[in-house]
Amino acid sequence: MNGVYINGEWREGSQVLEVINPATEALLAHVSVGDATAVTLAVDAASAAFADWSKSTGRDRGALLRKIAEGVGAQREQLMHLQSSNNGKPLFEAGIDVDDVIATFEYYAAIAEGLDAGQDRPVELPSTDFSARLRREPCGVVGLIVPWNFPMVTTAWKLAPALAAGCCVVLKPSEVTPLAELRLAQIIADAGLPAGVFNLVCGTGLAVGAPLAADPRVAKISFTGSNAVGVQVMQRAAETIKGVSLELGGKSSLLVLADADLDLAVELACGGGFFNAGQICSATSRVLVADNLADEFLRRLQLRAEGIRVADPFSDDVEMGALINRAQYQRVLGHIQRGIEDGARLLCGGERPAGLEKGFFIRPTVFTEVPLDSALWNEEIFGPVLCVRRFATEDEAIALANDSDFGLVASVVSANAQTAERVANALQAGLVWINAPQVIFPQTAWGGYKQSSIGRELGPWGLAAFQEVKHVIRAN
Image (tube, rainbow, N blue to C red; front, top):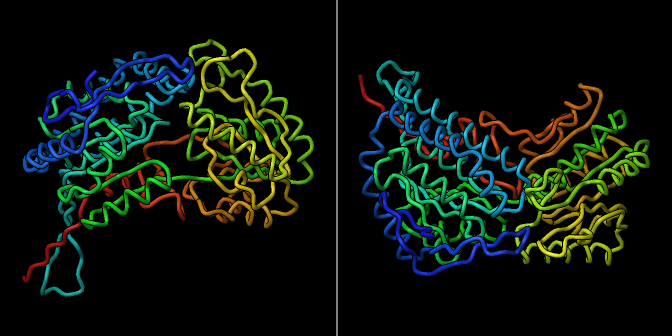
């Protein structure tokens, strides 16, 4: 299977990587992937295409984005199965992902269609001797580097606004989960984009991501992944002073206030900690519970966690699937073991489920009494691990939640709307949910404070990330 698409053509790469099913450990495919030479050719193609694409109308770009959304919708079932096979997530979760992709392309199609009327806007000046106008223009060729935990979703979040803005793109999907991304690339190709506007080079971070970030012709890099790699991307981009957007890690909190509905709190805790086997940057892996509710909350949480059905993603009654690969599986088990050694109390989970001898499965895991200096409490685990801690006052809960290097999201559970809003306003996070699961809409921004993000995705902010601002001032 070819994993390189440049200037409207699929090409063989320079080496071949194996793609593994994390639920069965079986070989899914061999994919030929690219290297620095392929990146150079892809940037060549994107640079050549930019002159015409950047001058295309927003209406034309919007029409193409709608075709992509329609193509994704027509292949919804196939894309769901590719996601679950390659990523290990349950089929129902893959369906949520595909629907998100469709919604994102449709949203930015509408945004693009409205750009023609508003590309030039008058600016009010204090002097009548001069007049001014504001233009927003595409920033150029952009490199998009996306992770393995949400194939196609993070791609759509970057690709749709980049194309809407009039940018040309070189996409690097994760070499771990390329299958759904390659099918999406074919859908994009079939939509009729001019050659060179969209290019894809699959491969490792060292072989593809690094030269893409360093290429001086790339005006902007948008990266989603770990903080460690984000630092490397930023260092490479700094060499040519290019724009950078980073979506990185999180260590987010769910605050269960004294008047919370316990059944709702338990469901939100499990959803926030165990969705996609906890492999989400927005995982609310730190659960803060009011003293008066803590004992009963823990009793119900343990029952619910122990009852979660961990199984092959295609099983009818599955609730949680596999971790992405052996390295991640061993990493999470290592965190669990070190947490125990640090003195945390393991309430449930922490091991492979009975009856699943193959695949990278871990039971939903809950810790209590976790020391505040433990890595389990402070570091992103990226696995199905919750840490629960009691608090006495609202101020203490807010202080504990904000005591983190990250600030991506948070959740608040409370029966009192005024209290919930007050707490939400005090939390240092880019997105806060109140009595709600982790719903995300294309209209609302995605990104966080501190070391979680640089910039924002989705909404008008996602489009602005791929635009330059130009003012033109003339004498009257």
